[in-house]
Structures are given as structure tokens and as C-alpha cells.
Image (cartoon, rainbow, N blue to C red):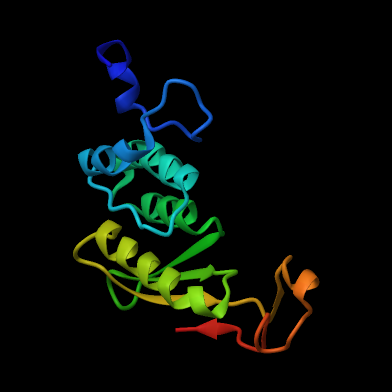
Length: 158
């Protein structure tokens, strides 16, 4: 084991990458860089998240840092609008292409990340845009059912 100790400190970007930390070591490695991993994240996403967090520390509390970490988490484009009035106010706008049952959870985690990464003296509004119609790949195998396997009509989820 001692000859592989260096691999324990490298999360890698995928489990297939040589010289990366074992899967069961990822939560401990994440704790070293002050990251909480979600159980529902797959292993490759956890590795990517840990790998990207350290370079983001120098951007913590900046517009660029908030934008980048939310984009890493969601895999979607994030827009940040800053305003002169009221002072220290900004608005986050992002699209989440999620099923209805996952939307609330992903939105909650994104908001938690935002609360941890934003400058302490600022406040914001958070707008999540939802595609007006979504059809997932597995829908074609099982049949499309409006309201069950598709999302219709909602453009904003606050």
C-alpha cells in the first residue's frame, strides 16, 4: 500500500484514470478540501467536483467563482446579473434540465452552494428556468405520457 500512497491524494477525473484515489477514499479526500459530496452523485462526478474545487478557491467570493462552481454542479450555463440598486444585490439565472422529482433537490443544492460561495455582505434572487418541454431518452422505450415522462409549460421555478 505504501508504494501507492500518492494515488490517494489525486481524485482524478474518472474512475478509469490510472493513479487515482480509491472510491471509498473520496469522501475523506473531499473533506480535506471542504467539500460535501452528495450520495446521489455518481463516482465520476464526485471525482470531477473534487478535482475542480481547489483551483476555484482563489475565486471564492467572486462573480467568476460563483458562476463556475454552479456550472460544474449543474452542467448548465449560469448567468449572473449585477445591479447598482439596491447595493450588493445580484441575480442568478440558470436552467435545470431535470425531471420534476429531481428538480427541487438540485435547486436546493445549487442554492446551498450559492450561499456558501457568495460574498457575505451580498444578497440575491435565484431564478431557475425549466425547459417548457422535456422528453428523456428512456421515454421512447416506455412510451411518452404527458405529465409523467414530460414536463410542459413551466418556464420559471422560484
